[in-house]
Length: 209
Image 1: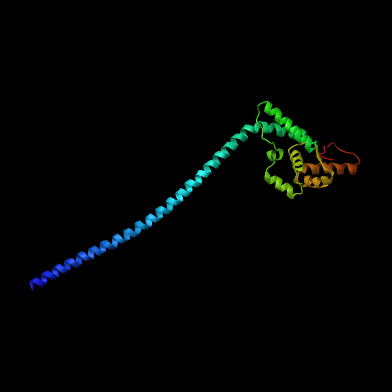
Image 2: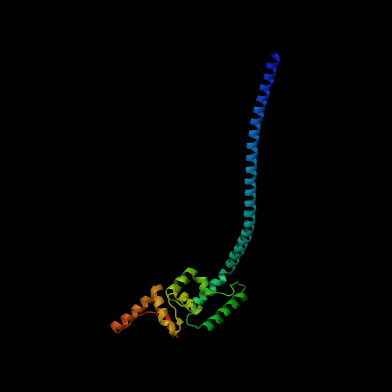
C-alpha cells in the first residue's frame, strides 16, 4: 500500500511539473509571437526610415538649389530694379523692337558698371504676379508680350503713354476700364468734354498705332 501511495505522490509531482512546464511553454510562445510581431514592425519602420532619409536627401538638394536661387536673385535685385524703373519711365511710347534694344543697352551698361542683372530681363515677370496675368487674360487682355508689357507699365505708372495696335485698341480699352480704374477716369473726362464743349486737364495712357 505504501508503494502505491509513493507512486501516486510521484505521479502528482510529475503532473504538477508538467503543468508548470506547459504554463511556461505557453508564456514562451506568447513572448515569441510578440517578438516576431515587434521584429516585423521594426523592419517596417526601418524601411520607412530609409525611404524618408532617401527622400530628404532629394529635399536637401532642392533646398540648396532654392537657397542659391534666392541668393542670386538678391544679388541681381539692384540691377533689376534699375531696369524696371527705366522700363516704366521710357518704354511706353516705343514699339517692341525698340524696347528690346533699349533693354539690351541698359543691361550692357549695368554689366559694365559691375551690376548684376537677370538675363534676359523680363519686365512683366519682374513686376506682375502670375495670378494677375491670368486675371488680365480673363478680362480680355491679349497674352502677347507687348500687351502684357503695356498693361504692366500702365498699372505701375501715374502718367505715361503706351502704344497699342489699332486692331486691338478697343479690346484694350475695355480691359483697362475693368481692371485699371484710372482709365475709366480718363474716359469720364472725355464725356465731360463732349457734354460741355470744353476739356479739363487730363492725361491719356493709351495711344493707338
